Image (cartoon, rainbow over all chains, first blue to last red; front, side, top):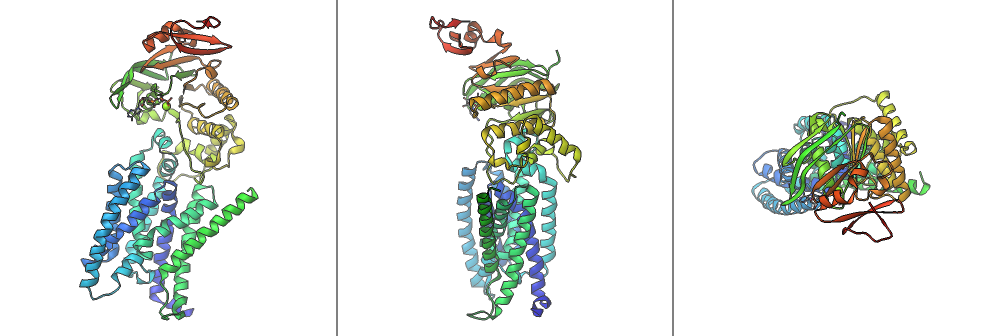
Length: 282
Length: 263
Ligand SMILES: Nc1ncnc2c1ncn2[C@@H]1O[C@H](COP(=O)(O)OP(=O)(O)OP(=O)(O)O)[C@@H](O)[C@H]1O
Ligand SMILES: [Mg+2]
C-alpha cells in the first residue's frame, strides 16, 4: 500500500474525487427533492456531446462538459418546461438528438485520432486519468458551486419543497430555478470527469437519495450525502488501485466501476436502515 | 376604520373568460372574513391577484397601503389550496415554520434563540407542538393545515389568506381549524380572509363575508349579504336563501319548499 500514497495519479484522483463527491452530494440533495434527477441525468449524458466535440478540437474534454452542461441547462430552463411531464418529454427528445450527434463525434474522435480510448474516457471516465492541470479548475468550480448553494440555501430549500409557498414568501422562484439548473449542469460535468458522462448522475443522485432515507434535517442530509459520496469515490480509488493484481489482465479494474458499485451498495444500505427504522417505529 | 386590504374594481380575464368582474371590497384588522363561492368562482384567482402573482387587467389592490407586488407580499401570510409534499423531503415541521420567517433571505444565517422561540411559540399557538420534529411529508391533512398556518403566520403579517383550508378536513378537524383561526384573529389582531365553498362551518365566527358568483362579489356582514335579493343580483337570476336546522342553503328559484323558512 506504500506505493498508493506515493503515486501522483492517486493524489490527483483523491483530490478530484473529493471535490466531485462533496459538490455532487450538496447539489444532489436539492436535485432529488426538486424531482430533477432526470434533468440531471440528461445534462450528464449531454456532456458526451461537449466532451467528444472538445476532444475532436484538441481541447480537454472537461471544458466541453462544462460548456455544454451549463448552456443546455440554461436553455432547458428558459424553454419554460415548468411542468414535470412536459419537462421530461422535452428533455427526452433533446437528449436523443444530442446523443445521436455525440455518436457521430465519437466516431470521428476514434477514427481521426491515434489515441485510443477517447470513447471510453468520455463515456466512463477515470479518476486516474484526471490531468493535474484540470484540478485547479475543478476545485475552483466546486468552491463556486458550494458558495452559490450557501447563498441560495433558504430560498432554494423552500422553493424545492413547494414553489407556491416560496413564491408567496417573495422568493424569485424562476431565477432560483434557473441558477440551480445551471449549477446542476456544472456539477454533472465535474462528475463526468470522475466517472464519465454516462455514470455522472450516479454520484449526483445516489448519495443524495441515500441521505434522504437517513435523515429528516436538510443540513444533515447535505452533509451525509457528501460523506457518502466521499466513501464511494475514495473507496473506488483504493479498490481500483488494489485490483491491479486481479484477473484477467492484471492491469486493474476501472475506478468508475467501483465508484458506481459503492454508490449502489450505500444506497441499498440506506434503504435497509430506513426500512429497519420504520419497522422499529423510530 | 383602517384597512388592511383594499380591492377596487379588479378585472381579470383568464383563457378568454371574465373571471373577476369589477371586484371590490375592504378588510379591517382583526376581522375574519369568509370568501365564499362555488368551484371555479374565482377565489384562488382573487388570492393570486392580492399576492401580486397575477396582474389584474384593471383595478387596484392595496395591502396595508402598498400596491400588490413583491414588497406588499411580505405583509401577507398565505396558505395555498393544495400543497403536495413528498414523504422523503428532509424537512421537519419546525424547519418549515422557520422558513416562514426567513425563507426568502439569501446568505448565511446564524441560529438564534429569538428565532427558535418565535417558531416554538407559533407551533404552540396552532396546537402543533408535539409535531415539531415530525417530517412534513408524513403529516395528515389536518396536521399539515395547522403547520401551514404556523408557517404563514410566524412572521406576524397583518393579513392572512387561506385558500379552502377546510376542503380536506373532516367535520371535527374543520371545526377545530375554524376555532383556531377565530382565536388567532382575536389574539394576534391579524385580519383573516379565507375561502370556502360552504359558508356554514364559518357562520359562527365570520365577521364579514365576501360572496363571489359569476365573477362579481357582494360584501358585508353575513346578515347583509346572505339574502335572496342580494345573491339574486349577483347570480343574475333568482335564488333563495333557506335556513334549515341552523344551516344556510342557497338554491335556485325564488320560492323554497314551504316547510323551510325563507330569509
Ligand atoms: N391559467 C388559467 N387559464 C385559464 N383559465 C383559468 C386559469 N386559471 C383559472 N382559470 C379559470 O378561472 C376560473 C376561476 O378559477 P379559480 O381557480 O380562481 O376558482 P376557485 O374559486 O378557486 O375554484 P375552486 O373552489 O374549485 O378552487 C375557473 O373557471 C378556471 O377554469
Ligand atoms: Mg381554488
